[in-house]
Length: 214
Image 1 (tube, rainbow, N blue to C red):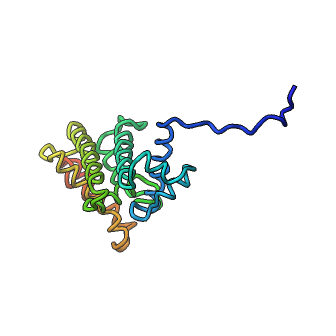
Image 2: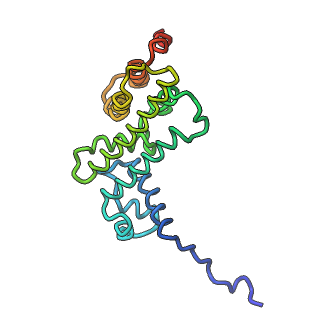
Image 3: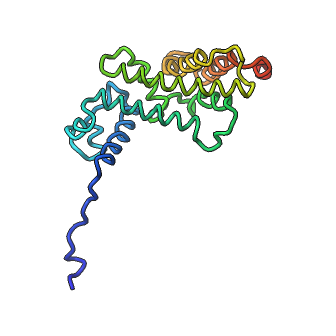
């Protein structure tokens, strides 16, 4: 009987193509959230996965295509957060307020968050490599927000005369310009929540707006 010491080293489990692609996507999401699209390196993604850069390009083709896949994933995750998370039966207006609320600890768009990724995407709309993906992600997320606005209208929390698509883009603009305010606005910890509240009050039903008027 062969002893345990004679056994060879444990073999690494070989990933399927889908598992490999998923591991790359997860690592890329982390790298781009921490460093941004321009500063994020494909070599850093490869190092996190434990593969070479050519493996990344074999799976996604280019850095821009990899970022596009990350943005598509972010849009999908935001959809899940809005519609599938525990407590998704909360009033739609409460979910909208949650989306617009600054990140904890006074760090809006903290590295690693979906909001950071989307804010970076918003700044890349004109980029020839990543702009198409950024625009597509914005359109998808705006559609999800518009659905929430319609729900909030049905629940009586949003004005009936508010155009759901216009309201969605208003809220999206508040989110996408948050990094600008964080970098430039005095006392962002106090003013940022007020900016979000004003945006919501602009589309709130009269009774709701009056209730938050102080």
